[in-house]
Image (cartoon, rainbow, N blue to C red):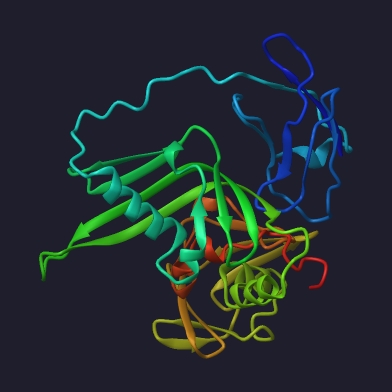
Amino acid sequence: MNGQVYSARDSTALEAVSIYFDGTTLGTITNSSGAYFIPIQEGIKSSLVISMLGYAPVYVSNYLNTNGQIAPIYLTENTEELSAVHIENDDWSRKKKLNVFRKEFLGNSLQALECKILNEDDLKLHYSKSTKQLTAWADVPLVIENKHLGYLVNYTLTDFQVNYEKSLETGFTYVHQVYTEGFTFFKELKKKTKRKFTVNRQKSYLGSTLHFLRSLSQEQLTENRFKIYYKSFEIAPYSRFKLQKENSSMYVELTVDKLSILYNNEEQSFIQAQAPFVIDAFGNHSPASALSTGGVMSLKRFAFMLPLDYKFRQE
């Protein structure tokens, strides 16, 4: 698949523009003529992201109907905008908000301690006392070094919320829900992948949301050691799913509000679906907001995040 990228201001070719499939290691950059070529793997449905510092990113989702030729992309320069206006005062210190963001985004684990946001100063945070919500955003991609899995990740944060609730019984405030959405591009941290990274990636994958969704789309839940429970009782693996296979994608609808998942008779999680969703050949589900997880799966935050094309050729 190929195309060209130009400046919207004067139609000049843009060199070194990043072109990548969201959530994968599949990417390239434009040459001095603004041209690029990126191979497309069968079954992928991730958005194609066109991104360059100083310009608003462009996302292309209908590339499967282009016969390999993407229409020219014109990037618009970012104009200096005022930060979001918040009428309500924010009485949390930046240090406190950063600590919450690190914990809820990177994770609260030893593995998360091996992750570092290299441009943390670009992160903007606001806490609303009336809504009990912490929000975060950034005008440029976050650059995150993951020394646990061996990746350098560009993360375009499009939505981040931590919602708190107050317990009626104890009076304590606790984290009720965390929602994160964004576009990611993975690069190897080292030219040669260390054995440590290979082992950690395997451990991160097994029992993860990605592992579960791939297993569901391939109808291999039992083979991959997943059990499904409804209201505390084990049920037939697919009895509460409506599945429809179409080419390399699986269309999924839950017929109940919530299902519990047991992986390897040890790790307990649950899933809820607000709407039907589709799983592509990589295990990526869309729309992202249709599915939420809890338990062990939800605790595997960024520190455990793998690219969607991880092990794709081997499975």
